[in-house]
Image 1: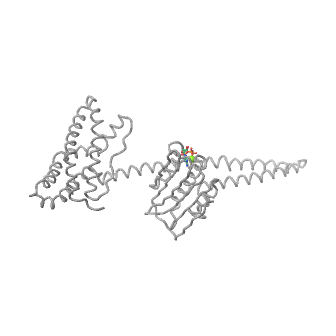
Image 2: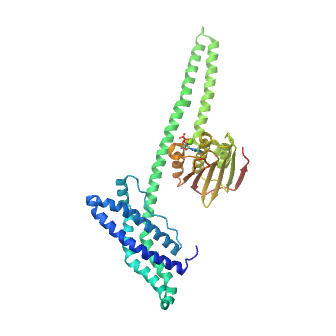
Image 3: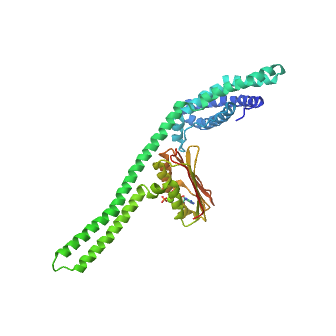
Length: 383
Ligand SMILES: Nc1ncnc2c1ncn2[C@@H]1O[C@H](COP(=O)(O)OP(=O)(O)OP(=O)(O)O)[C@@H](O)[C@H]1O
Ligand SMILES: [Mg+2]
């Protein structure tokens, strides 16, 4: 990022002067609003003052970020829609209180600092001073602005702990859910078959033990038992596939995704560039994510073609699934996409959805992870 020119810095100082007056008004409005909260009318003042303060603070964050060449994210916690909950959330956000402190700085000392920068440029005699001093002065002012307006290390760590706590709870829920699903699958599938098998064999045994019995019936029962055994094996295979798809173990993520693409009714172009192998749990999560995206393409998109691109860039494994269908994918409308998001969140991964009405749909799954093993590059034509 190039350094802003001295004139631009002075322009910022002029903006600080104007916004300093706004800051004074907002500081008064906020304090009066806070005091009047005792009789609730204060709430009306705060409804105006808090968002306005955040807008003015945003402008200063952008200017300070430019002056110092930093990247400063917006630090506020999410605000719920319900008014009372919103008020509580704003009051509990430490950034709200730091904004208030910043308003006081911006309309007092900070305002004087900005005034000096502007005045130095207005008189020819002070131009040398302006030339030398405007940059360090504005850097100082920006440092103080960010001391108030950017979240501190502790706050960043607190937020991280909160995210980790939430994703851990989700991972535990997810694991418990998976166990329940496995239990149900085993109970309804193989277990039921084995019970039937035991009954068939018991009846066959009786038929054979009875000297006056019917050997043809015993043979029929044994044939039934064989068929039931095959069905039980098939069902056990399906359960095992749900735990860790064997194709993943055999062929890795690239091969497994290609196999998924080949099973689709529409042509799916797969493009893979993986310089190694991701950890098995990440592989599993991404594989199941791609499987769900492709299932959705088949169920909802009405697409003529789809693509899957799988890359590892900047320490992040990235899968992009696109289709040229009708669009309108909405993670909140079902359980499949929310499931992907939860599964990825346990690895600090994300899912981004872009699906305007009329299409196209693009789902980006990303997980930070390192790869192991040597390089394999593949690309397949539409299958
Ligand atoms: N590729 C897509 N193109 C168009 N619409 C989509 C696409 N993917 C998802 N959608 C829409 O988004 C909704 C949510 O998808 P999601 O996978 O979460 O649920 P679902 O597929 O309806 O049900 P399930 O819980 O069985 O997955 C779908 O109901 C569908 O309307
Ligand atoms: Mg779905």
